[in-house]
Picture 1 (cartoon, rainbow, N blue to C red):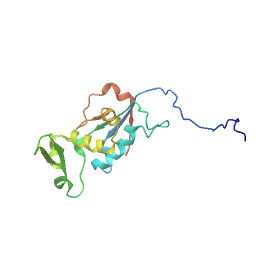
Picture 2 (tube, helix red, strand yellow):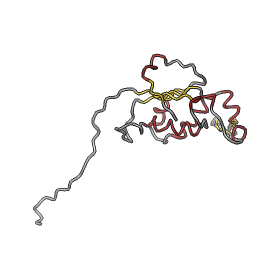
Picture 3 (tube, rainbow, N blue to C red):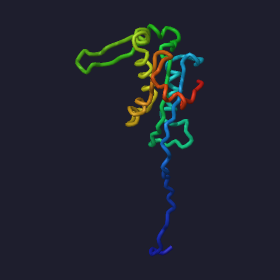
Picture 4 (cartoon, rainbow, N blue to C red):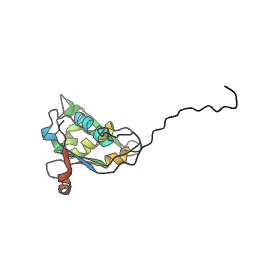
Length: 157
């Protein structure tokens, strides 16, 4: 090859075609889940929020997927975790570390319990907050999403 010939390198580029952004609603009832541990439920919710269950998944492309979780107060802890597991938060001030047991958290605010569990399962990137906003958790069977019920896809975990 002479120096005047151009060398062409086949470089393959992946482009994302504009995909229709239709909302998808997934519905999970904790009463119908066999193993009701919060971590196992969150591990099933996380891929749906990330869009990994979709055919056209891309890591940097955020889908309009919403997940509804009802009966969050019915989650079960195995072994001694109900009393021994603790959730921590910090106020930002010196000595401001607050500690709450799983039992108290489940009684007072089961929504916060499941939110923190699912948040821990999502990757810590710029999309996590947006994905968490698309998670709807309700402590009992009642929810305010009656208009979307026709679009619900029931997930059996």
